[in-house]
Every structure is written in C-alpha cells, then in structure tokens.
Length: 272
Image (cartoon, rainbow, N blue to C red; front, side, top):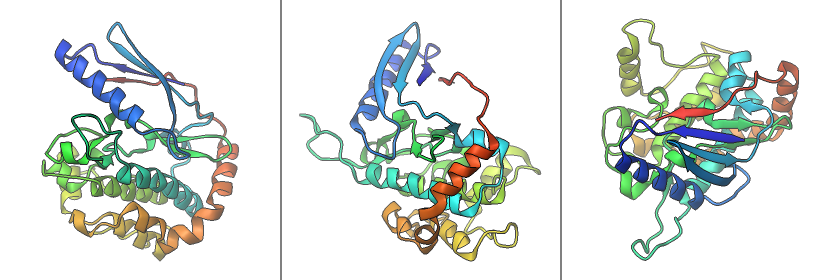
C-alpha cells in the first residue's frame, strides 16, 4: 500500500524539516506485530510517498461507516491491539544519536479510526506514525492531529505527553460501542464540541447503549480530565474488560468483516 503526503503547499524549509522528521520518526519505530510496517519512502514533485504493509480489508473508519456499532468483544480486541502498539511506542527509546544519548518516549498524537488498519483475518494494526514525536521534545503545545480525538490538555494548548494518546483510545472505544461520536456538536457547532471535551470528567455509556459496566469503567480509566489520573497502556491491557473480552474478539471481528464485505477501494493521500 502507498500513502501519499502532499506537502507542496509549505515552504521549502518546512518541506525539508517535515520530510526529515517524518522519516526519522517512522523508521525509529522498527517492526512489531501491532504497527503497519514501512518498507520505503520517496519524495517527488511535492509528494512524499510511503510504501507500507498492505492491510487487505481497509481501516476502522471504513468499517464504522458500514457498521457504526461494533460488538463489544470486537471493541475490546481492537482496543487491546491499539494499546499493545502504544505500550511499545510509549516505552520505546529512539535509536540514540551523537547529540541524543538518552532514549526518549514517543507519542502518536493522532489515534483515530482512519489510522487503525484491518485485515480480513482480524489483524488490527496502528499506522500513521509520521505524526509521532518524542515526548520530551514536544511536551510543549504543538497542535498536530485530529481535533475531535484530542485530549483536553491538547485542545487547551497545554503541555501533553503519553496520556494524551490514552484519552484518544477512550474516545475511539466509546465511539465503537455507542455507534456514534461520544461528544455532540448538534448545538453550538465545532467549538461547542471542543468545550464538551475540555469539560468532560467521565462518560456514562450503560444508559445509552447495550455495553457492559466493565466497558464503561475501561473508558473512564482513559477519559480523565487530569492526564495524571489516566491509566497507562500497560495498566489498561490488564483491565478486566480487556482480559475477559479481547481473547475471542478477534474471531468476532473476523466474522463481522466477512459479513459486511469490503469497503470501496480508495487511494490514500493526505494534504499538508
């Protein structure tokens, strides 16, 4: 699969910085069972092309467009695979260079359904690590990623780190269970939606859908206004909801993918 990043709108200086940073961060991740592998990358005529592992079903965004509500075991399994990827990302050190002898944690910064890839046999992998950055170097207030899945601290322009990814996992998981985005912009538009995010302390899902109390508890371990109160990826992988549901969730997801059929083929490209 080839992902194309259109970067010709930026200045030459930004082009060089963006391309170099993208490639450094992607290659620094290495290969593991939970992230889409990058095979090659090349730049031509304002377009950076990334040659990546092919996931033969599509992405999670395409699945929820066809089937908005995902069965709870499949939700737990999908969440577990994202958390495995984040566990590696959040604890992994960059390859040291002469100017950086200390290993630095990484954060993804753009956890969303479109960046969760699926294969027909139920394999789930996280992608788009070009936006990933070192926690120590970006613990400032850069606004990169998809705003609707951003944590309160990011929306407010405050310092952020690995807990910001955990918030996004909670929002994504709630969306899968509810069959809709957990925050609403029906009144007041997009800014009202962001205000809901920044004021959120917890989500009550049991009264809104057929999910279990344990699923709601899992999500509320992710969606805490204070980043320090959020569980880590390692802790969430040990949560009772994940432990009890994720093991058979792959079979449930595989069956669902087979039932709904394949999404329409599309050429994946981003504008920057």
